[in-house]
Length: 229
Length: 229
Image 1: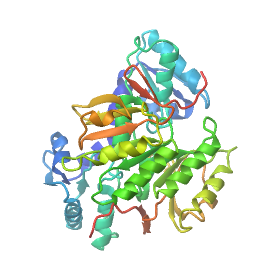
Image 2: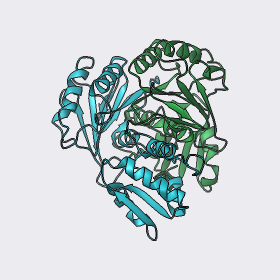
Image 3: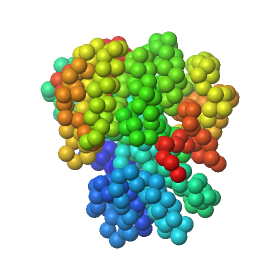
Image 4: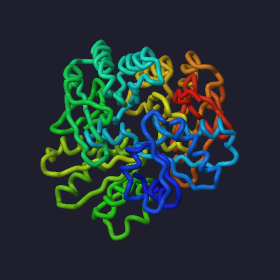
């Protein structure tokens, strides 16, 4: 968490968020009004936050990682537009540490070169478009940070991504897998493109696929920036 | 800055970094030994940090944004390998807020969908590879965050990128330009793919090129996540 996010949480009187994320900051919420709800209730949550703000409350909407990366930032702005409240409610987006860079830090330094951030969640995005992005990122030798690689119901997509990546990348391309990046209980594993889908992967996991230059040294995953030593 | 980074800075006794970034945190460095040097001295800086650590000092190497994104994280790990010091010096990489997400927060919520992070600095990367990545990112409709868009000597590259992007994207594709993202003196501008190169852009600027869905509403740049309202 950033110093700025901490300060904003201290100053607000009302907190709105997804249950799991609100629970993560329970110790910071004493004396505040908390509105938490479940998964797939993003739209209702943001419309509710806008109503609370229109009632004069000082509301913080919490999101995990960076609110602007597949998070609540865009949904809140769209909720304000839908509600005709853009000019009535001042909004500030507070950036954070997104899972790609939190996972990268746990693994060493895999994101030292150009990279793509791609979510495998096909709830809101056609699967063909997701695969197309995987193909193009791999064809141009970008490192790839994969968000939402798997959920309880969605287990096949990561296998299909692996099959696509193997068309362009060496089977021994290093892959890093981080669960709970930057949180309590952080776990990391190193694998290869040929093998990584046999590792435990779930919705709390971020997967980083190296590019052609990425290497493993001891416990570290490193993509060299290109300096001459 | 994250709470974790602040704590690490408090606990170290020695700070190593690029002049400009060390100056940004001058108020946190009282009583510490500071080793700052100039641009393009990254390798020397990191080897020096390793020597100081081998002498028993508790060293913090500072980097702007996120150290793992084109920053010092990889160079430090490579310096430890070169010096044969991997098992002698414990290292922790502290993730931060990278320019892409800091700039996105200033602009609204442009990174709500899959995106590529691409640096235009061709000091360490062949220009053809950079352009290839721009082409592939645009062809698969990813949002693109451009780092190092321009420097005093390197002014043509951004024009060439614009020319390439116009092959795949609408001329009115929204573009956000942020200078000093997340720092004092932050400035932002909105433009379009056809026009953005006429805006002031320098080495402290991050440029975000929207995808086919990105829109401008008032002062905000928003890429919808895809929720139905």
